[in-house]
Length: 231
Image 1 (tube, rainbow, N blue to C red):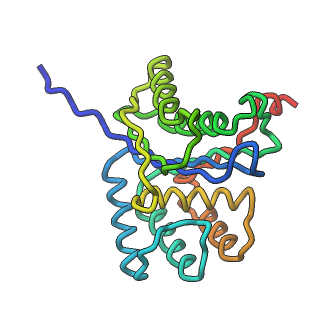
Image 2 (image 1 turned 120 degrees about the vertical axis):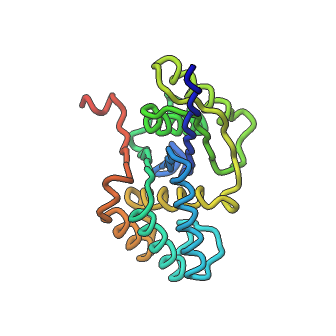
């Protein structure tokens, strides 16, 4: 009998910006690493950039001093050039979203679209999947973790996909460099659709999205409901 081959490990780092139905734009983004080595490569880049710039703070797109701009630009350009990964984000514009479908419950829309962007990026993959999502103060009735794991595994079983969600963890992004990288890419996408003031954010968004490697490693899904597509 042939020895059973170990199943591949898939790592998914999730971040979001905005609230669906409240903010002009809601973005839910995922950094997909379908080989463990991919995460190690990004972490090596992170460590190199931190030492180079003597930078030990959290990477966070909302805060953009001159130093942060230089660090973030160096980090993202280096990752795009030397690291293998895929970042995908779903963009929900408030004007396209009918919250009646979610009983006007913002967390239900948040959960639904987060599940959607993860599913469409892992349905082609086979292996044990682990999701890491930044810890949040969630309302008591929000079953985000249970919903995500249950629905994604039901979809995999029903449609015959090869992935299985083994666990979902909610570490603090302040202690997780890969979540921080996901935050930066999510912020770049949010900046494209809902520009925040500040020339540094505009410049960083333009530089990263025009990078020749972005077309292969960054996917942006500007969601439109079927009811609007038919008009």
